[in-house]
Amino acid sequence: MKKKNVIDENYLEKIPFRNPMLGWSTDENGIVSLEIQNTGVFNRIAQKLFKKPKVSYVHLDEMGSFLWPLLDGEENLIELGKKVDEHFGEKAHPLYERLAKYFQILDSYAFVIWVKK
Image (cartoon, rainbow, N blue to C red; front, side, top):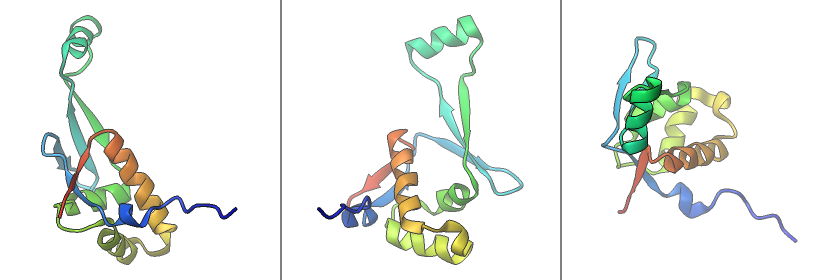
């Protein structure tokens, strides 16, 4: 039985866009930090009782920080992969497997939304 490839061709054709509900900033080293608002009843209780912050920060790695500003809803993962390959070269390989997994993680936390064209 032939092993099925982890990456679905259609997945690479998806077009990601930054979730507009997230704030983000870039530090002097070019690292992107996402600002996650801790809202809701349970978060408010944790903020009062356990002094939890109202905003949490997620710091992206070098490749994520390169990609984040490019997520404008215009380019699919294949096109973004070409830019990553140009910038990082062999350091980014296996390129599309890493991109697919990275965007699955971003999607699972609702950091990106998918544009339909």
